[in-house]
Structure formats: structure tokens, C-alpha cells
Image (cartoon, rainbow, N blue to C red; front, side, top):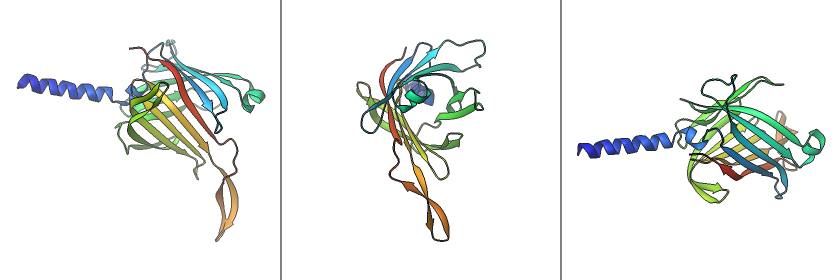
Length: 217
């Protein structure tokens, strides 16, 4: 009986460990993810890769260095350059999985990607806006449905002008990110001017979807 009790405790502990926020974005040097960004008509806007690279002497303790490379095919690529590279730093904390954008032209920014507890209804607010989390049994990955997914929905601006919905699969990473931007027009209503959403906004929606990945064990 004692042996059975110990086995049950260990199994429960393993499940909790597997379901913490960091399990939904596996961080190990050599891991990589490839994405394509599509518009509403299925047109390709960009191709993007994320790679966990070896730490450097300036990296902070506990952080993983993720280097991104983007090639654009839309008007941004024609006017601002077709290729971009960037650096981000991820770390597991008691609050959840955090991402740090280093200072460049803008000030350093630190946001919470996935908050603890990893359960439907968890909410938080930081520099990226107001976010809430939902847990799903399955979501769509490059090869079809994958189990154990977390969906983070964030709202930016007052009034909300940007909606970002990111879907993560346990043991895989981010499999999908949807961005919708709402344009507002001034209007007179009641006692004074208000802002109304403009349905004719062009280019205000895109989906970044995972096409291939490598996650080491």
C-alpha cells in the first residue's frame, strides 16, 4: 500500500512538472521553429524562424537566447528591407514563462508569455496589454492535431485596437499566432465625440502558423 501511495505521488508530481508554463515553449540550445505569415486571402506575407542559440557572456542567468530571422514578401519588405533579425530572451519564473526584449531604439521590455497557474481563467496585465489564458485538449500543428494546448488572448490599447491570440502546444512551442488590428473613426454620439470601429480597415489581420520545428529531448 505504501509503495502504491508513493507511486501515485510521483505520478502526480511528474504531471505538474510536465504541465508548467515552460513545457509549452521548450527551451534548449538547438531547438528551432519555422513559421509563415498569411493574410486573409492566404497570401504569404513573411517567413520567420526562431532558434535557441548558445548563451553569450552577456546573457543573464537562467535566460535562453532566441534569435529570430524574418523575410518579408509584402509591402513592408519592399519599403523597409526584406530581411530582419532580432534577439529575445526567455526564462522560466514562478509567475510563468517570461520574454525580455533587449533595449535598442526602444526601452527594454519584459512581458509574461504564459502565466501560472496554467489553467483556464488565469488573467494578467503587463506591457503587452490585458491577457487571459484558456486550456484546450487539442490544437492544430504542422502535421495535424496535437494534444495539450494553451491559448493566450491579449488586448492592447484603450480602447482596444489590437487583438493577439497565441496558441502553444506542450512539448512543441507556439503553433499559431493571430493578430487583428482595428482602426477607429471619430464619430459624434450623445454628448460628445467617440471612436467607432472601422470595418473597411485593410491589412488588419494576419496569421502566423508553424510549418516545421525541431525540439530536442
